[in-house]
Length: 128
Image 1 (cartoon, rainbow, N blue to C red):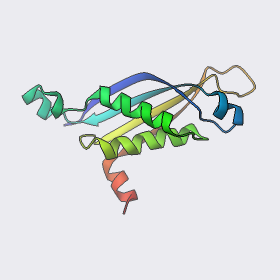
Image 2: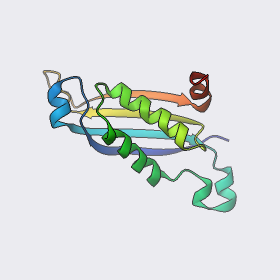
Image 3: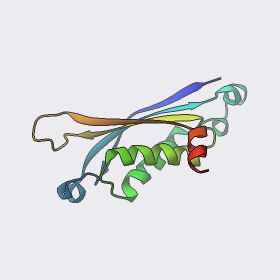
Image 4: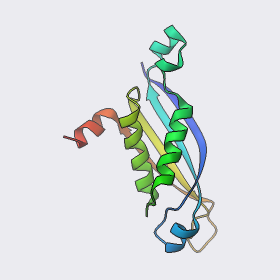
């Protein structure tokens, strides 16, 4: 069985970007995460330990976004996807969208967004 837990519009303040001012001043980022898992154990136990604790997922993502500066939001999305799969064994697949609000493009743009989807099997093949 495949079920999804969605975290939408998680907001972080980070210092990512290719421009030096982005890395010194920082800006607001948003992330959406679709976590593919199986609710069967949870339906039987109704216990948080048998599912994905989305409060822990949010705190984990926040830590990842803050602990290092990246030039590309593509890198941020990939790191989040990989680290979620590594650290939360009940996740079968994850899709991560990261948005940079008001990017410095020389015009009016609400945001720029990237998306990464990865399965546990893909992660394991990469580590072989």
